[in-house]
Length: 231
Image (tube, rainbow, N blue to C red; front, side, top):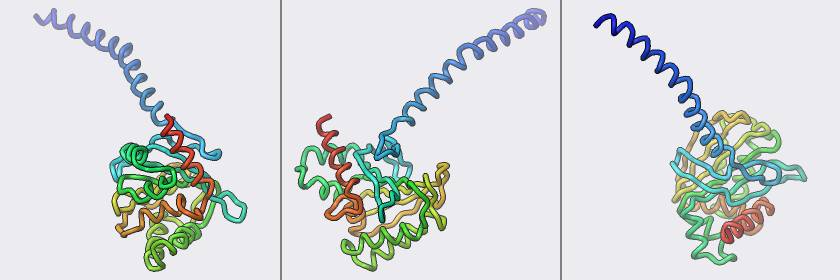
């Protein structure tokens, strides 16, 4: 019995090693390729690549890029913004909204939607938080605007946003989540949330409403939505 075991065990080891060497790498290669192809899908928004599909962990949600454009100030391109919506929101707007009500209906929806800001140049964090706060004043008032400005500044986690940095602002219901990351993709301020009545619809109307901070982003959203409807 012992002599048979001495022959069989080494033989089994050799067979297992051969299987691992041949089947294992192929299995791992197929798996990684599939994962990579999903993460590499992107859409050009005025020269900046945005993920076509955005997967969030907080809140747990998958969203689709609708469109976007560039926010400029004094002739300088500051950042590009992409507007995302969950599939249920997009389907609901397709069925119920007329073109003239599209932007308001989208902004006021309680379903999940995201603004993804990608910075084209370095800028002081306080300049961005102040600009966003000021854009909200005529929509939610000075007190709430100042509170949001402080909130978003704390979320950035540093005094300066370098080229390639990102800010993500997500709304679902009346709750707003925000996070920021460096050009290398590292979280800089963590993820924070705030509950404030009227804030979510207001922040989206900053980009999609009358007198938007970026006319190009508004038009990019409208064109992107029209393309989704046709598709």
